[in-house]
Length: 237
Image (cartoon, rainbow, N blue to C red):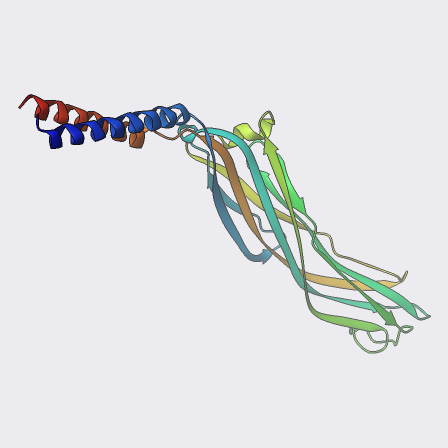
Protein backbone atom coordinates (compact mmCIF):
# COMPACT_ATOMS: atom_id res chain seq x y z
CA UNK A 1 0.00 0.00 0.00
CA UNK A 2 1.45 3.40 -0.98
CA UNK A 3 1.53 6.34 1.44
CA UNK A 4 -1.18 8.11 -0.60
CA UNK A 5 -3.44 5.07 -0.49
CA UNK A 6 -2.90 4.72 3.25
CA UNK A 7 -3.95 8.33 3.87
CA UNK A 8 -7.04 7.89 1.72
CA UNK A 9 -7.98 4.71 3.55
CA UNK A 10 -7.48 6.40 6.93
CA UNK A 11 -9.74 9.31 5.95
CA UNK A 12 -12.38 6.91 4.69
CA UNK A 13 -12.38 5.07 8.02
CA UNK A 14 -12.98 8.35 9.85
CA UNK A 15 -15.82 9.19 7.46
CA UNK A 16 -17.43 5.78 7.90
CA UNK A 17 -17.11 6.01 11.68
CA UNK A 18 -18.87 9.38 11.65
CA UNK A 19 -21.53 8.05 9.28
CA UNK A 20 -22.11 5.04 11.52
CA UNK A 21 -22.62 7.29 14.55
CA UNK A 22 -25.13 9.40 12.61
CA UNK A 23 -26.84 6.26 11.34
CA UNK A 24 -27.33 4.94 14.87
CA UNK A 25 -28.92 8.24 15.90
CA UNK A 26 -31.24 8.22 12.92
CA UNK A 27 -32.25 4.63 13.52
CA UNK A 28 -33.08 5.52 17.10
CA UNK A 29 -35.60 8.11 15.95
CA UNK A 30 -37.20 6.37 12.96
CA UNK A 31 -39.84 4.76 15.14
CA UNK A 32 -41.09 8.09 16.49
CA UNK A 33 -44.66 8.88 15.40
CA UNK A 34 -45.27 12.06 13.43
CA UNK A 35 -48.38 14.23 13.63
CA UNK A 36 -50.33 14.39 10.37
CA UNK A 37 -53.79 15.35 9.15
CA UNK A 38 -56.24 14.69 6.33
CA UNK A 39 -59.01 17.14 5.44
CA UNK A 40 -62.22 16.60 3.45
CA UNK A 41 -64.61 19.39 2.43
CA UNK A 42 -68.22 19.25 1.18
CA UNK A 43 -70.17 22.25 -0.11
CA UNK A 44 -73.97 22.27 0.07
CA UNK A 45 -75.67 24.51 -2.49
CA UNK A 46 -78.75 26.61 -1.74
CA UNK A 47 -81.86 24.52 -1.17
CA UNK A 48 -85.25 24.72 0.59
CA UNK A 49 -85.13 23.96 4.31
CA UNK A 50 -87.22 20.83 3.78
CA UNK A 51 -84.73 19.17 1.38
CA UNK A 52 -81.89 17.22 3.03
CA UNK A 53 -78.50 16.74 1.41
CA UNK A 54 -76.96 13.26 1.59
CA UNK A 55 -73.22 12.87 0.97
CA UNK A 56 -70.26 10.68 1.90
CA UNK A 57 -66.86 11.27 3.51
CA UNK A 58 -64.02 8.70 3.26
CA UNK A 59 -63.32 6.96 6.53
CA UNK A 60 -59.85 7.05 8.09
CA UNK A 61 -57.58 4.25 6.87
CA UNK A 62 -56.00 2.79 10.02
CA UNK A 63 -53.02 1.59 7.97
CA UNK A 64 -51.88 5.23 7.96
CA UNK A 65 -51.47 5.39 11.73
CA UNK A 66 -53.45 6.03 14.90
CA UNK A 67 -56.45 8.35 14.67
CA UNK A 68 -56.49 10.81 17.55
CA UNK A 69 -59.22 13.35 16.75
CA UNK A 70 -61.98 14.06 14.26
CA UNK A 71 -62.90 17.74 13.95
CA UNK A 72 -66.06 18.76 12.09
CA UNK A 73 -66.46 22.40 11.12
CA UNK A 74 -69.90 23.51 9.92
CA UNK A 75 -70.82 26.82 8.31
CA UNK A 76 -74.56 27.31 7.82
CA UNK A 77 -76.23 29.99 5.71
CA UNK A 78 -79.84 31.11 5.59
CA UNK A 79 -81.42 33.53 3.15
CA UNK A 80 -84.92 34.60 2.25
CA UNK A 81 -87.54 37.31 2.45
CA UNK A 82 -90.29 38.05 4.93
CA UNK A 83 -93.57 39.89 4.96
CA UNK A 84 -96.07 40.92 7.58
CA UNK A 85 -99.39 42.73 7.83
CA UNK A 86 -100.70 44.10 11.10
CA UNK A 87 -104.48 44.10 11.51
CA UNK A 88 -104.32 45.80 14.88
CA UNK A 89 -106.40 48.87 15.62
CA UNK A 90 -103.27 50.68 16.91
CA UNK A 91 -99.63 51.08 15.86
CA UNK A 92 -97.20 48.28 16.79
CA UNK A 93 -93.55 47.32 16.46
CA UNK A 94 -93.04 44.01 14.68
CA UNK A 95 -89.90 41.85 14.88
CA UNK A 96 -89.16 39.55 11.95
CA UNK A 97 -86.61 36.77 12.61
CA UNK A 98 -85.39 34.91 9.54
CA UNK A 99 -83.74 31.79 10.95
CA UNK A 100 -82.96 28.12 10.49
CA UNK A 101 -81.58 25.25 12.54
CA UNK A 102 -78.93 23.47 10.46
CA UNK A 103 -77.31 20.22 11.53
CA UNK A 104 -74.93 17.55 10.32
CA UNK A 105 -75.95 14.06 11.36
CA UNK A 106 -74.85 10.50 10.81
CA UNK A 107 -77.24 8.59 8.59
CA UNK A 108 -76.92 5.52 10.80
CA UNK A 109 -77.10 5.67 13.73
CA UNK A 110 -79.03 8.92 13.96
CA UNK A 111 -76.48 11.06 15.82
CA UNK A 112 -76.18 14.83 15.56
CA UNK A 113 -72.52 15.71 15.14
CA UNK A 114 -72.70 19.51 14.99
CA UNK A 115 -75.38 22.18 14.52
CA UNK A 116 -75.65 25.92 13.88
CA UNK A 117 -78.50 28.47 13.96
CA UNK A 118 -78.03 31.37 11.52
CA UNK A 119 -80.40 34.25 12.26
CA UNK A 120 -81.10 37.73 10.91
CA UNK A 121 -83.54 39.91 12.83
CA UNK A 122 -85.25 43.16 11.88
CA UNK A 123 -87.77 45.41 13.62
CA UNK A 124 -90.38 47.37 11.71
CA UNK A 125 -92.85 50.00 12.98
CA UNK A 126 -96.35 49.44 11.55
CA UNK A 127 -99.38 51.68 11.79
CA UNK A 128 -102.90 50.50 12.57
CA UNK A 129 -104.52 48.36 9.88
CA UNK A 130 -105.11 50.35 6.70
CA UNK A 131 -107.85 48.01 5.50
CA UNK A 132 -105.85 46.43 2.64
CA UNK A 133 -104.16 43.02 3.04
CA UNK A 134 -101.23 43.62 0.71
CA UNK A 135 -98.19 43.41 3.01
CA UNK A 136 -97.45 47.01 2.13
CA UNK A 137 -98.74 50.48 2.90
CA UNK A 138 -98.72 51.87 6.44
CA UNK A 139 -99.71 48.61 8.16
CA UNK A 140 -97.69 46.11 6.15
CA UNK A 141 -94.10 45.37 5.12
CA UNK A 142 -92.29 43.12 2.62
CA UNK A 143 -88.59 42.85 3.31
CA UNK A 144 -86.14 42.19 0.47
CA UNK A 145 -83.82 39.22 0.66
CA UNK A 146 -81.77 38.93 3.82
CA UNK A 147 -78.80 36.59 4.47
CA UNK A 148 -77.21 35.32 7.69
CA UNK A 149 -74.57 32.76 8.64
CA UNK A 150 -73.38 30.85 11.69
CA UNK A 151 -70.33 28.70 12.25
CA UNK A 152 -69.18 26.21 14.84
CA UNK A 153 -67.00 23.12 15.18
CA UNK A 154 -66.99 19.96 17.24
CA UNK A 155 -63.99 17.74 18.00
CA UNK A 156 -64.24 14.06 18.91
CA UNK A 157 -61.21 12.64 20.69
CA UNK A 158 -59.81 9.23 21.50
CA UNK A 159 -62.29 7.53 23.81
CA UNK A 160 -65.36 9.23 22.32
CA UNK A 161 -67.78 6.71 20.82
CA UNK A 162 -68.33 8.93 17.75
CA UNK A 163 -64.71 8.38 16.69
CA UNK A 164 -65.40 4.74 15.83
CA UNK A 165 -67.85 5.67 13.07
CA UNK A 166 -65.02 7.24 11.06
CA UNK A 167 -62.59 4.30 11.26
CA UNK A 168 -62.12 1.55 8.70
CA UNK A 169 -62.50 1.13 4.98
CA UNK A 170 -65.15 2.67 2.76
CA UNK A 171 -67.15 5.82 3.39
CA UNK A 172 -69.28 7.34 6.14
CA UNK A 173 -72.76 8.53 5.12
CA UNK A 174 -73.70 11.99 6.41
CA UNK A 175 -76.81 14.17 6.14
CA UNK A 176 -76.98 17.96 5.98
CA UNK A 177 -80.43 18.82 7.30
CA UNK A 178 -82.24 22.07 8.11
CA UNK A 179 -85.42 23.24 9.80
CA UNK A 180 -86.97 26.64 9.19
CA UNK A 181 -87.48 28.48 12.50
CA UNK A 182 -88.46 31.96 11.31
CA UNK A 183 -90.92 33.91 13.45
CA UNK A 184 -92.77 37.23 13.58
CA UNK A 185 -93.75 38.82 16.89
CA UNK A 186 -95.06 42.14 18.18
CA UNK A 187 -98.75 42.30 17.35
CA UNK A 188 -101.67 40.17 18.44
CA UNK A 189 -103.48 40.30 15.11
CA UNK A 190 -100.71 39.70 12.59
CA UNK A 191 -100.39 37.89 9.27
CA UNK A 192 -96.90 36.91 8.05
CA UNK A 193 -94.97 34.70 5.67
CA UNK A 194 -91.40 33.62 4.86
CA UNK A 195 -89.54 32.15 1.91
CA UNK A 196 -86.35 30.51 3.16
CA UNK A 197 -83.35 28.67 1.71
CA UNK A 198 -80.23 27.24 3.33
CA UNK A 199 -76.70 26.34 2.27
CA UNK A 200 -73.52 25.25 4.00
CA UNK A 201 -69.98 23.97 4.01
CA UNK A 202 -68.68 20.99 5.96
CA UNK A 203 -64.99 20.46 6.68
CA UNK A 204 -63.87 17.24 8.36
CA UNK A 205 -60.29 16.86 9.57
CA UNK A 206 -58.59 13.68 10.74
CA UNK A 207 -55.63 14.28 13.10
CA UNK A 208 -53.47 11.21 13.54
CA UNK A 209 -50.02 9.87 14.43
CA UNK A 210 -48.12 8.18 11.61
CA UNK A 211 -44.94 6.08 11.82
CA UNK A 212 -42.64 6.67 8.81
CA UNK A 213 -40.89 3.84 7.00
CA UNK A 214 -37.12 3.82 7.71
CA UNK A 215 -36.22 3.21 4.03
CA UNK A 216 -34.01 6.28 3.66
CA UNK A 217 -31.97 5.36 6.73
CA UNK A 218 -31.54 1.79 5.57
CA UNK A 219 -30.36 3.07 2.19
CA UNK A 220 -27.74 5.23 3.87
CA UNK A 221 -26.49 2.26 5.84
CA UNK A 222 -26.19 0.14 2.71
CA UNK A 223 -24.17 2.86 1.00
CA UNK A 224 -21.76 2.98 3.94
CA UNK A 225 -21.38 -0.80 3.95
CA UNK A 226 -20.78 -0.78 0.21
CA UNK A 227 -17.99 1.79 0.54
CA UNK A 228 -16.34 -0.15 3.34
CA UNK A 229 -16.44 -3.41 1.35
CA UNK A 230 -15.04 -1.77 -1.74
CA UNK A 231 -12.20 -0.22 0.26
CA UNK A 232 -11.23 -3.52 1.85
CA UNK A 233 -11.13 -5.18 -1.55
CA UNK A 234 -8.95 -2.40 -2.93
CA UNK A 235 -6.57 -2.85 -0.02
CA UNK A 236 -5.99 -6.52 -0.92
CA UNK A 237 -5.07 -5.73 -4.52
